Image (cartoon, rainbow, N blue to C red; front, side):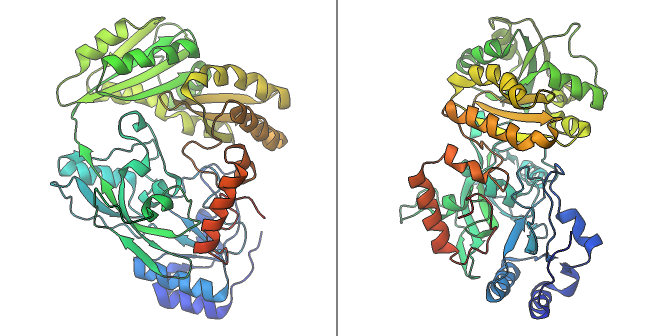
Amino acid sequence: MTAPALDAGLLGALREAVGAEHVLVEADLTASYETDWTGRFTGRAGCVVRPASTEQVAAVVRACAAAGVPIVVQGGNTGLVGGATPAGGEVLLSLTRLDELGEVDRAGGQVSAGAGVTLADLQKHARSAGLDFGVDLAARDSATVGGLVATNAGGIRVLRYGSMRAQLLGAEAVLADGSVVSRMAGLLKDGTGYDLVSLLCGSEGTLGVVTKVRLRLVPRLASRAVALLAMPDADAAIAVLPGLRERLPHLSAAELLFAPGLALVRKHGHLPAPFGEEHPAFLLVECADRLDPTDALVEAVSEAEGLLDATVATDSAGQRALWAYREQHTEAISAEGVPVKLDVSVPTGRLPELVARLAPTIAAVAPDARPIVFGHVNEGNLHVNVLDAGELAEQVTAAVLHLVAGLEGSISSEHGVGRAKCEYLGLSRSRTEIAAMRAIKDALDPAGLLNPGVLLPAR
């Protein structure tokens, strides 16, 4: 696959903007940027550009706008829907060098972070000041702040702190003409018109290139307890959550997993069985507080209706061991092959129905496919991974997304729409909503140069 060669004048302008060593054109240097984490989406970039500041990003965008060359924006390249992968010939703008972390404002509970800062580094920085960050997910070591904002990422703590948009107090972004919008004061109250910062969150790089953000921090809660509950089925696991929320105000995570996924994790992670016998469904819960929440968690779990077995970990090693059963799902699934990955949500009350109908829906179009499902119970959010779909990947995608739409759900809960699901956007958004989104896109990026083909269907 060969990308169209970029004009020498544009390459010269890009090298002048960021330094020649940060404009990559050779195939062996660009290859790692051109395929997504799953291996399913790939394309050739005209070049890869690695700016180190907002000013350099602005210079790159101006040069591309003048040449009429589209831009694909990429953070840690941990996306799962092809939203940061080139389609062919674009300038790929890698933001990993925008890794500056500001001093933690303890009084305001805030910090400024560059788009290239990894989630793990942000967490470490906040914790060193006695605070914490409200978003967490398994890809923390490589996922970047800019990517989290672009997709309005959620993760395992949404139950307690909300998704990325709830943490966002300000942003700096480069628009399609190279102009810069900057609102970094971190004001908690501001009633002066449209909330452009919130608009950028979840826009997947189609409205502007987010280069820096101002983030809300949360109290550091050092005392934790984690429990893994074995349940007879998804219905029972979902049904116990309201009681746990009511009894455990310090509940911070509730994750659903099933026997097939646990078997893969054990196989590839060489992990022991969590219980003496096999069980069909599991609920992993975590509590965090300033004081030890173990007793309250044990009491609440022991009274959970339908409970088959449970194990509770209070020390950090035991907690990591229990979390491994959940967090190693993605790696274990990928070790089996390239999956169809679908991130969906439905109203929580309809989650049992979605779980019950997923396997027969997939089998109807791909009888040999293997669905591996896990997710976040509180948000009605399932990660549907389908192995061995082969040439039927698109049919599987269509079947699952239409099922979700029929249950009043969303085709994308926290991974974004990207290229993978843009043609299905109409299942979750009305024609009026899509027209309004297009109007905003056209106003901010009239030439359609920012992440073309991502989020919005082709005209």
